[in-house]
Length: 326
Image (cartoon, rainbow, N blue to C red):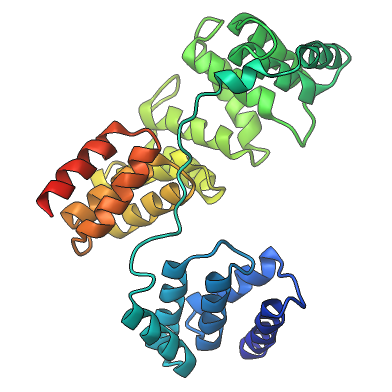
């Protein structure tokens, strides 16, 4: 059954290359999963998709890994051929599948906002639009079209949370963060916990992440590593980068879990791919020091560079020091 599916997808890839078909996320995911299970045909198709950017971003590194898996695990002739070509040409040796968002100055962007936008957003919130109330809170926090005011932002988020439907929990989550940090209101972990539980129960990953960190550090609740790890894993699966980074650290330091460098690497890897600069920095540290895998200073420099681009000064410093050693 699986081979028949992969054969069909191999044909689909050829159609995509000729511009006759557009892939869906599920189709790309199925081919990727089939390759992970060791199907050579799937790995060959996956490599082509990464080379051409079909259903995913282009990545020579990921293409090389797909061909390598198809060759090593399934002895797939075409995969071996493509893997060999890439090795000879030196393609895909360095990671090219990470994009860390650089810090940018938003002040100029905010200054160009139409002043009428603030008033229309405020009016929509007053009329019972929960999404508008969340936007209004953000405008007060960032000073978009109005003066900054955490207290007014708190009021907007409170209104938005009370109006929130099943599809929007942004206001409730932001309100929870205000209670945790004591922004515009006295710190109240009990209220924060209820708000994070409310959002987490509705599969809002940020709520699970912050609730997990409350249990991890014992903020307003009894410290519970097991509960923390469970919540952080749940959030990480939904690509919450902060949770993935925290999990990586826990597996490195063996806090609440057994020491596992492979899992630590995988969580940092996921965090970095989700544009978390700290996750990239930790990846650099793993490769520089050979933690749970072979030392690779070129990869370490790559990840430190990504961390530096993301605003982590330690990444910039580590990159400079490593460049001097090479």
